[in-house]
Amino acid sequence: MIHGYPGQHQSDEEVLGKAYDRRLMGRLIRYLLPYKLLVVISLVTILVVSALQLAEPYLTKIAIDRYIIPKDSSGLLRIALLFLGVLTLGFLLRYLQIHVMQLTAQKVMYDMRTEIFGHLQQMSVSFFDRNPVGRLMTRLTNDVEVLSEMLSSGVVTILADLFTLIGIVIVMLLLNFKLALVSFSVLPLLVWVTFLFRQRVREAYRAVRLRIARINAFLQENIVGMSIVQIFNREERNFAKFRHLNQDHLEARLRSLFYGAVFHPTVEVIGSAGVALIVWYGGAQVLKGALTFGALVAFIQYVNRFFQPIRDLSEKYNVMQAAMASSERIFKLLDTEPEIKDPPHPVPMETIRGEIEFRNVWFAYGDENYVLRDVSFHIGPGEKVAFVGLTGAGKTSIINLLARFYDVSKGEILIDGVNIRDMAQRQLRQHLGIVLQDVFLFSGSVEDNIRLGEGRISSKQVEAAAQYVNVDSFVRRLPNGYQEDVQERGGVLSAGQRQLLAFARALAFDPKILILDEATSSVDTETEMLIQDALAKLLRGRTSIIIAHRLSTIKNVNRIIVLHKGRIREIGSHEELLEKRGIYYRLYQLQYQSQERSSAEVRC
Image (tube, rainbow, N blue to C red; front, top):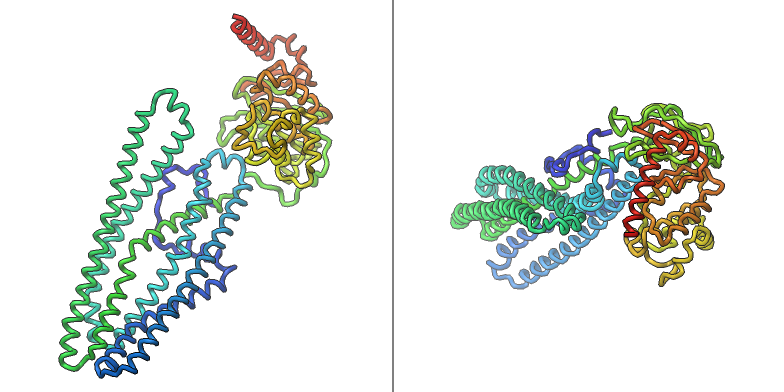
């Protein structure tokens, strides 16, 4: 397990590694193993294409020495046709190689995205508390795309260039050893320029990546909070800040382009110097009769081909460096293990009665600042219990622990006498139904949002659940009924309608334990009666935990548990707690007086 990833700072996103990391490359190669046949085909075609490229200058040598100078037109036609055949075969093989490697890269990208998404689904809720959504989406999209580019073009191109360079060196040495050494005399200068360029472009590339990350973060923040920007008239200030960030990025990009613009002509000049040496020394050898004119032309072509891969170095270096950085981030994510795990041999809990018990539960979100302190209570099967308290008292933490989104720091939680840590998470949550204040709806139809893809729930059951909790009345008025697209987060529905839809969803899954977390606090007046009627139906026959600020909605529960600063301070019915004149009584008085003032203001 690699520690430290969840709390990673935004700037860590742009840490760049080496252009080649053997450890990371070894892990990446494992994704290629299922497609080793395709990889072998691609490598073989690379070798053949490289050999064909080496043959072209040699064919030029033969054409000049054997047929052009001796004026043999018939032989020249044959060599021209052979040259055409080599070009055609090279084209076909290059097409095959590109197609096969692109196909392989897409398959690897599919496998990797599937693995990352599956891993994310296993992660604990605490992981998502500490990792921004944008960062995780970047892993699934941009980072995987960068690796795909490396597999489809970066590595393959480098291998092809390597084979070509080695082949050119061997052929040139075989053709004329001395002339080859003269040609290679410019290599020390080329190596020094390349090393210098690599250092400069690394710094420039890091600067560009860092600044584009700042722009993305600023854009995300401003687009999400556009209503706040406009209501507080911050458009000009934010525009000025964005202009500064954009200018900073422009300057970094121009520096990066400058190094590329200098490097390419420098390589051209060095390459031209190599050609000039060949013309000078090789020309003298031709005049002496120690070298054929065709060999001299072939040497010039080989030298030009030798420098071409080096000219493309900047692009390949950036691709490889970005790929290593992306793979580092992806593998850190994949190596981060879930904090909440199923036991090796979970206790089977196909059916439950709905009994809940908290025994001396302590809980803190990652440190010793406990939000629950020695909490103990028992809820019998079918009992309805409400939790009340000020914000921060620990009410929502009880739900998070019961659903095992987090594990208790000390103590234990039992359902039907079985510690929930001994259950499989999936089976535990099958018996829980949770309706939150902020109802989350997925893109799709009304029916999809009630069923949530569960095949065992039929359309008739969806409609029956909707009718039971008063959803059917407004769904029927939608243009497409149950097939109406609710849009992102349910934009076409009111808050009350979304709440009723959440009730229908919970009823369709028929959980034994129902949890309502502030489920009625944002309901509009028009649907108040529908909500209360739906709630009464939904709670019937189920163990229910209700968290609400509106104390008027929990008068009829069996018991009310009052939390204050993480501890249970009072337990009793609505009437009993009012008689005690304690914390619950003060909360009730505050709400009553607030409602009285609101009513008076409305009357005025």
